[in-house]
Image (cartoon, rainbow, N blue to C red; front, side):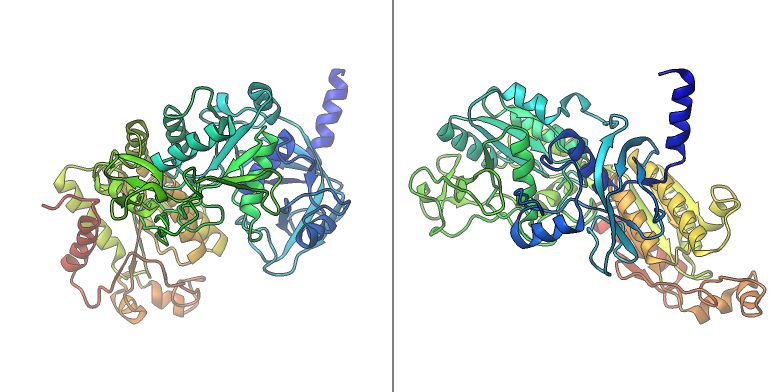
Length: 554
């Protein structure tokens, strides 16, 4: 191609509409392009989605168990667009979508990927690679399905696709089943979205690599960006089976203990600072499904393309010091594994991970990925009306923590940030949200490096606060403090006369007067400074930090 032809092609591409993919959409695109979602070559049409829902097959009769769709805001792509350039979040153009159809979605019918469910359209059509995706850490392990199949060769392959670290029960069951099947083991850490317990994808990969040291020689670890499927019951298991089959697996190990990695389960630790919703992972009663001495079973689960195998119910035998089928353990000597939230609590407190629960190599990676709360960074995010006292409390907290001298502290106050980080922004809702997100970004970076960030913006909108919580929770802990001082008290304290100007119409978009304040329903602590003194309010926050383990008692 001549230089002129290349320039013309670049000019044509530059004129196409574009869409920046969310993380789940980016993961789906990569699997479409790599062949992991074969026979799909693009995002599914409305007819295909309907056929999958009704019959578990595409409109042309090809078996396929779950929808793969691209939902975007209604006004994001012009109605006459025939091609759309798909970008990653950093703006790199990755693929071209040849638009074959578009359909308006009813409210609530979105893909559940975080793009919102109101005013969406669904684009469908073939995707063609424009540029290779930029993988992060461990890119050498992120092989294509064809490369993995070539490495595995022929013969049975037992795959385990996981969003959480492996423990000794799972390792024992994999060894047992692989021996029965005479199969190689393929471990697929699923790295789209937060990982169970350890949060970060690179931490998940490290824990899986550590577990592979206790598995037979030839075990292969391949990270795969499979997003969680939230579109229907059974879709998570079906997606795992389809991807594992594409990578060469002949059988899928399904972790039946009910823990965090159970397909569709709800055992995931709720962020780095919270507790899991649900306490799965207990061994079932002694009348469980441990089939005879072997404790294994296989089934062609409806909607999966390869058999799903289970090792039955296992527990830790405290007498024999080994994990084994529950039916082989003397009653009263069995011990269930730790549930994900129990493991998270141990790590948060800096307690030792029991040797019976997971191999030492995995335990070391767990401790590295999730250090004790007293050693990791966190964000104190104070929100409330102007004049509520949040800035005063934030300054007092900074001073109290600085006096201790054992942690590095940064204060990101609302007015100071407005003058520096967010200079030029207005007080429109969009600019207010952007201001809060900028604060959140800086705070997350402080937490990433083990520091404490204290933030004190008004942050009136719940959605922006939620995005900051999500951002920070990837790197540290997020604690929301609602300074819930009544508006009449805030107005009476107003030294700058802002409320008076707002009521006179001099100031537009003033929170509490002409703009709403969405009170948090997810605050870790609520403080009313009309009922608490300045010192008591500060002490309440310090008490939360001490009782939660972020600060050592003095």
